[in-house]
Image (cartoon, rainbow, N blue to C red; front, side):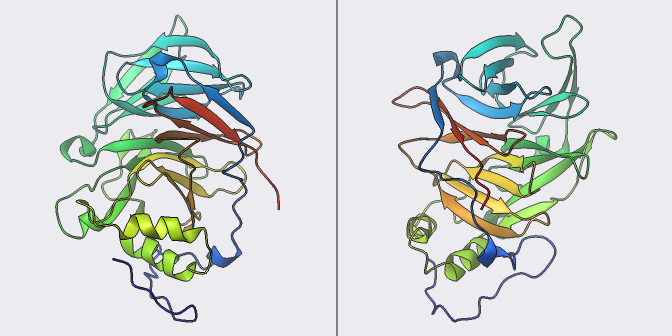
Length: 304
């Protein structure tokens, strides 16, 4: 359970470079109205289990995968219509997709990465990379490109280990496209203590109440955060992480320190699994379908 403290209380938190409450959290303003999308499109049944989003190299389409078939989908970002699709591998649990300046990448839940050059063309070439995450239960769900550091960020839904401390954090690793290697240790960590520090510090905000309620519920998992997608904001460099559990959007600064947590409306996105940005900062989120079809939602970027 979360502890309740007075609004003037000093909030203890980790002050290391990774995993802490950002000193800028009080000045942060979310640039999206998550209750008012500018577009909301139902997706076809073949994308019922859509699990990843990315912007195409030319910026004209959204690229998507779903977690049962090795197929890339091209979606018109203005209409939400699937305009093209292409096989890249056999059936599998594919969870993330990301375009880089050199190639398209897809990641499996196991941590296996697929590099796809000339996707959908007659000269398409696919190379498969196994990583040390194949030997863990980390359950990879998100993939993003960090242009500043020229690396792919790989977000895990579950702990990478079995210790008590592992259970209280979720990790983000880095894959180097040049050396074709995954970092042995996480480059970012989201810890339960970071979330609790933010909830305590932001307790006076009415919007925090539902988020606090989710994290205070007794659950089988001691830390119920379940990262399902990750993306780097093209204008601010902030790291956005979507959690399907609790339907949350977490924003971290460039150093991985927690800036903000926002709640995603269940009526808009039942199970958010995909996340990407347009060049102008517009945010796209996709949700798997349950009782209703899968959906793709766009939120306009607002400059305060």
